Length: 487
Image (cartoon, rainbow, N blue to C red; front, side, top):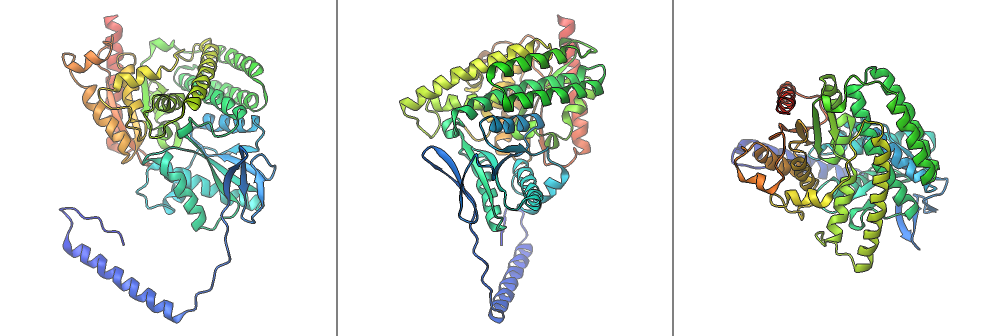
């Protein structure tokens, strides 16, 4: 029995629920006395463990498997079609048998809701539902295959910190055999596997960010949208194969070939001739097509280009917290030095990939400056507030203010971290030019940027939300026109 009370709760309703609960308890005790409980067959949950710096899986029969055995398959849940596919390719490059899940559907949402209290946020419900549906499908095809679902891990009261534990509990309660959860943690900068996977996964993250930016640009500017979609599909297949099989030098050559394909796509306008909206907020929702509810396409059809905040900034943020001892985990000097050297390699890969894709004219060649992003928001929100992406959302919004024509912070319904950042931004970005927050930030050339906070629960946008989007898009166009007139 769960009771939630406030000053508006009626006593009669509470008493009725308590009486019904006591009646259920009484009937349950009576049924226990009348029936003999049959013992259930023994169940062993599939688990992963590390031994001699290698990852092993113990299946439900008690047999041990190395993570790269043919009998083991790693499955990457969807968090954007391109990102999940390239991360699975990174596992393949490192010698693992890996695949990925397609973007979620309403069926996955329904399955997730039926296995949750529905008080959890949207990312957990979608991931849980998609994993359970995928398990049912794959175990019908091959019941002896050991399935390992990859999930990121982090400390804190959020999906990263708690929800992979809840999914493991769901698997245990359903007594599902030969299914385990593989987690990498931000406590060590997400470097839990060998370096071959680590560096290829980082390259895949950067590539997926620039590919997604190029795709959104084509969605808004391509003359022939269908032709552009076909080219993007072919380019994605080329990149996927290259990430899964090719060394770094050959991968860069493939990326150069992909850029040539992009350059041949005719555009109706240049990037600087259309309004631009920056989409920030919770990392899963802003990347997942189903969670966004076709938001990108809606803006593109309105002639507005959308740029989604890159995933790589979150990895840089985790590194920043560890290097500066702002996290609850304190690294020794040797690990900090290792993290510093890894950061140099990350920066080199980021610069190389973005230099290549910048030649397409579809992306902005901007390197992540995490110190500036954190510093610009520090007076409004401490970097020690590590629940979700609040610091990154606030810092990125202040950086983008005046550079774009609109800013949206999107997150799951009821998300604490998103509501904290929305409360800060909704007041800060709407202040007049004479107020003091501008002394903290370089003065933007285009004035305060229109801002909108948006929450989603997986259902289609309500009429009120659609009306707000219409008003916001009108403000974006007005901001763009005013900026061009002043120039």
